[in-house]
Amino acid sequence: MEEEKSVLDAYFAVIGKDDPTAYDKIKKAAQYETNSHLWRIVTAKDSEGNIKGKFLTTDLFMTVPQGTDPFDKNNLREAGETSWNTVMARSGQNPESWKAYIENDSGLLKPLPDYERYTFTSEFYGYGVYTGGETLEALGSGSSHKGKDYAGIPLDKLKAGDFKPLTKEEAKERAITSLYNKDTALQRVYKKLPNGERALGYRPAKLSPIAQRILALAASNSYWRPEDNSSLPLHLLEEAGYLFPQLGAVLQADSIPSVKRAFYVQARHELTPNLGLAAWYLRSINDDRHDYLAANGGGNDVASFDTLANVIGVGARYRLGNRASLSVDYGQNRTDFGRYMNGHTRYEHAAGTSDFTLRGRERGGTPTFWVVRFDVGTSDTDVPHSWNAFIDYKAFEHGSFFGGNGTEGLPDRYLDGIRSFTVGAGYVPAKDFLLEAFYTFGARGIGKRDTLYGPENFKLGDYTRLQATYKF
Image (cartoon, rainbow, N blue to C red):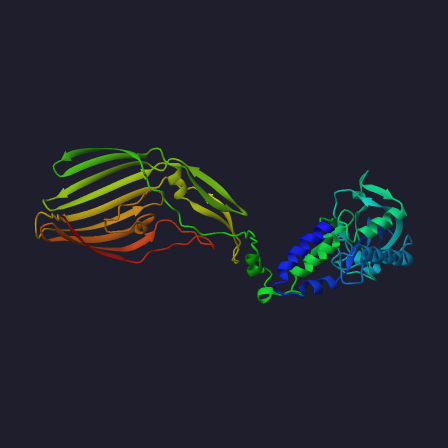
């Protein structure tokens, strides 16, 4: 108890900065559930006297200490003994009628159909400690009758060695200490039943009833309402240096690393004076390791890659007279990295709801790129008044593009994972001076982009670029 008090005092020292009276108000609202260590066998019978079920249950009763210090052990023991004596005088080892304790949402009695119509009788089983692994399910939903409630298990789930007998005096001592000692106390737990209702149960406590109640009241909005009734007093915690992890998903743009070192080879062949073919190969070498995280439920899947580029490409160019040409290029990046980037996020989604659960990343196929371009003329900075014009259509799947040098007509944002058209022209007004203009339109994503609420198709606005180059 002393360790719990130290922790709570430190916690409420922070709360006191926001509401100095909060701790006092919470401490005064003191009532604790007492683990009696008294057990009964309860029998359920229908109207014809047929036995429908038997249960092993324990008495749970409320103790309300007086005073303002919830950690006053002498005060707690005095209140616990008073409660114990009161309960023993009212019922003790005598048979009891269960009717007043039965509620419609009883978790313990759910296996019995029409249990509301049954007759329940009890007989004293003994004093002791249940050491089995079953959760003690409450007879009701948590409300007590005359300061008492019951919780237990079906009798057929009681296994040999699951019950450690105690004398009456030993049980009394453990009942009194269960107010402040987690080792003899029980703790409430809840579960959702198949019909959607909530059932109450009890398991061995991880905190004393004092700490359980103080923390529960502090988390409620009845005694302390920080930050406009927020349940997370972030400004106080930040000032005190506390940090709490918050589970959530973060949208992050894919970052394609640049290729720092690569092996490149190209072969060209002229089939006719007007038609030429080319083939080339590029492979990155000595790449750094790159790790990528993909949200999957409450955690992340990690994918690691140390080879970025393994690209093969082919191209052809056909000359149309002396001033025009048509060219086509096609290639693939045949690496796991490329296939990962060309994939998509997996979602679980119930139709008609806004609930999306992230389930990692699905790898795609080998990313490809291709460009078709028609050129007319040639801008030559050595020839004043020379000019050129072109139109192209291009598509680079995500994972096939590793970035340009920024001197062409488009930024990387309009190339990576995008298909688009571009028209452009160049003109040399004077020697060593080049003017250029580019207009890109119809830019659309090849795949879908991720959002927190599923994937979506997207497009980019038209892009215009004017630039001048002077050679010296």
